[in-house]
Length: 133
Image (tube, rainbow, N blue to C red; front, top):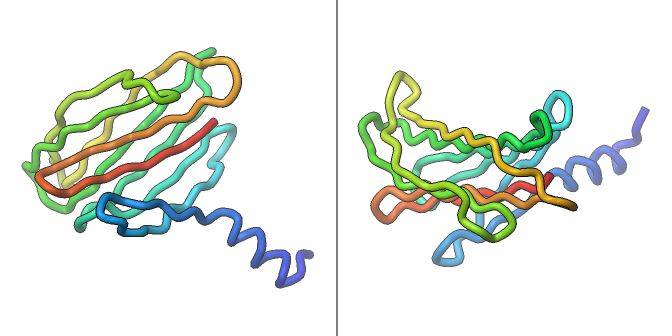
């Protein structure tokens, strides 16, 4: 059984702090889901929330970004970057009961550590998440 100080240190190690445009700080929670996937999530500069997941997939890496704004019909502009280079971009509309959208891409698995950035904007609201695998 882990002692309380060790549990606290482990929990603190799972929390990262991201800086959003305008210097706003928001907590992001990174975790390993089932298998080899890595997940992180946080708040956008407005009321929306973002989630980002990356996992190995047959020699490639599947990256999934999601925006939940609680408002259907919003048009969002999104971008994926892989190791600093833009690899995918487009627009999506929030829909359904969750008023959200998701973008899934299977990207090349570069040698060494892969770093992904998911960024989405709607008006002045900015969402940005990062994950490494």
